[in-house]
Amino acid sequence: WVCAECLAATRPFDLPACLRCGAIEIASCECDVLPDVLQSIRAAYPFAGWVRESIHDFKFRREFGRCDYLAQTIVDHVPLAGIDLLVPVPIHRERLRERGFNQSMLLARAISKQTGIPAQANAIERTVKRLPQVGRSMQDRWLAVAGVFAIPHPDLVRARHIAIVDDVITTGATVTECARVLIAAGAASVRAIAIARG
Image (cartoon, rainbow, N blue to C red; front, side):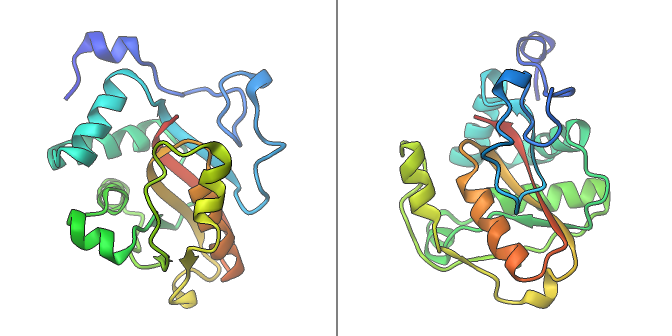
């Protein structure tokens, strides 16, 4: 899916300076603002170059053939030890009907296929439909996800070590709100994993 030249131009986050927030340099560590509900945020690549193009092709041009390769980037570059459940970031049921798929769910299933870690598509429900996060300011992103998620079946997540799966993490607002409701429902720990960090 990717030529050697493009691979060389956009390097993975194999050895971040901070293993919790995934910062590449200590000076950019974000752990002081990373909420306690999130054990860590880790992504395979920066949201740039071929990674950005591949995610856009997968998400907006419905090139689903890219899914297994993009999931493999997470498996190859993000620590998954100790995770016993993969939970995709949900989209509202109306948006799911409009779009026809949830890219985070497809990624979670592909990671599950490659690792054997089970994926639970309906562990979190988005109960409020809001406009997409793209183009919002940092403050607006946090406000837009406040109170929009619920746990319909707490028994599915109770005492589990969970990884929230998303395609791109930017401010971390969405995965943090997901983690908040998971911990409140009894999850043992929650991490966030993604293809890219923007």
